Length: 306
Length: 306
Image (cartoon, rainbow over all chains, first blue to last red):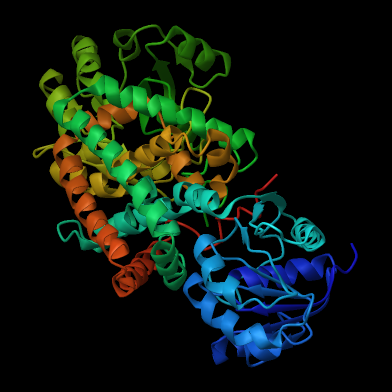
């Protein structure tokens, strides 16, 4: 691989930015990687483990001379960061982000981007339930998707360069309209996370079933919900607040379906349940065929236990 | 290990019974393992792969001379099987099952069990999303729980022997009251499965987001729901129909919580969301500490992909 950007500035040094730094190093895609984070502790850890080439104290300092600036902070913090860095951006630089919501980021960041700077929002569909500067790893984006959401009239060369970066970090890249992105992600990510959080909250709240029993017997299905529900609270708060319309839309459909199944249970209509459960199996097969998961039995976690 | 039962009869040859056969062989716990299934195709596959020592055509034939009979059929089929085998049970034998619901199994099977035969319901909390005679593996129960639900007045020696069998197959054993079992499982397994099925159904139904996009971008969270929702439809239909009260109880609590979070999203109350998401993280930590899952990052499935 060859260097695609002479200097990259990472604003925020959590799971995604840390993994980007490691993936860029793996393929030598950046001349220098500069990083910063709001928390002094995060900056100290990043410096200690050598996550990036240079850790600086402020976003304004980080973006100086950078050819690519990546906003890797919670969606709700993007606007303030954009306002801070705007006067310091290098002409011809590209500003991108990794937020899970795209319309809100465009609305918050777009107005701050000066003439002559390219703004190309992005969203890598990858992550783990871990967060912080120690959680990144170079392989996070391998075989995952990264969605680019360029505005109309974006410079094709700048878009192509960012696409090349993500591909060289291991991802497959697609372009998508911002509103469609937010709807697709509401279905495939945001509402599933909200539901997982809710189910874990219910279990915790249920005093007849003690916490220790819920934990002890979690392997029966609940465990997979707790994994999702361990994700970063700030990030997810911002996702729901900024993708409100699509989330509420999909939630409405979800409760409608759930009530239909609940009614079938109450009235003993087993055929409705059977047909529904048979139908959902086909989607699973599609996901395995698309290479987005393996067919290895995972519930028992036989291969990984201990 | 030493032989605990001279002859074991497995009624049903799916994931659980198949794994029991392999786990009993691994530790040489049974003198002979006889198996049967309603479907001729399942019996043929089991015979072909040598899953058990002897495959027979009927449940009545399978239980003859058996010291332990395990009903490993969907919960809704247990009563009919019990009626069929009752006249053929050996005096002093133990009848057990592996159903995910216990009160309904006791009500359906109990009346058929003749005097002098021990009836000790059981439920191993283990499984994968796969089913059928080829899906079993000897390690399925290792480090998992098996709950025994003996009726009052059960013969302690018969209970101890069944406990020893499950422990020798790798499980940790606890005893529990049937109603409490059904409530605990509604929280940790049944309602999570229903929710996963519903979410997958919603995604499939949403025509603005094409099926291929839902599948393509599933790694963002949805994927883990489809895994759960690929489980055996007959088994799950019966679970919901036979654990109706606890399922509807927990579902009611779930929708109550979900509506509270939905309202916080609609009204922009980020602090409520943040506090809720922070709280659920603690349960996840408890599960890892209890050894019921690993802390390895799994969302990216970096270690397993391709």
